[in-house]
Length: 256
Image 1 (cartoon, rainbow, N blue to C red):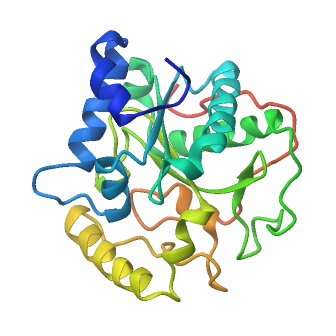
Image 2 (cartoon, helix red, strand yellow; image 1 turned 90 degrees about the vertical axis):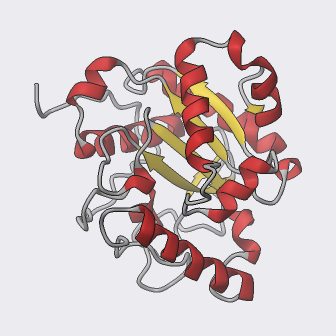
């Protein structure tokens, strides 16, 4: 087993994996390819059914070694992404211990998400792409790793009302920016998908669509705000991204 695998490999070898990994992939399959076809993100569903998605399993997200493992997986994925298919993305399942499942709230997972994202940059050996601003406050900023811009998606066990951001374990997905070349507000396909996805989100979630959901490149858009959405309409004022800093240790401050 490599660090990055596809659906076909998992379908053939799933029972040989640890139980938590089996459950994570089964839950993901049930969510994204539900028989009623209700999952809001149509490209993600298409990518899954077409075997364009790639998967990795990582340990406890609070541990620095997990950030290192994630960095290694992202590097491996970057080498195969363009051959995986036009609807590719890299889904990361984290082993989420019982104490997290019982005690972590949405804001705890938000802090942990940004700690993980910051820490993997400590293992980034390439320069930040010149075409992408390094300041998250600029509307064309995007997270970059190993020279590749990615849209990052996070779902957690603590999300309840925003079901499109709920998952049984901590889940992060990295989608290369080039995937959106034909899916944006300037293309007919992009405009059509936007209407369909927003309609599906309204039906899927128990709260209205988050106001931070906008198109990349819009003057009033900030990609980092879309990476991790709250269970309500709350939105942080400042981006927690700290590229280039020493690895950070996550410490849960609340509910101890």
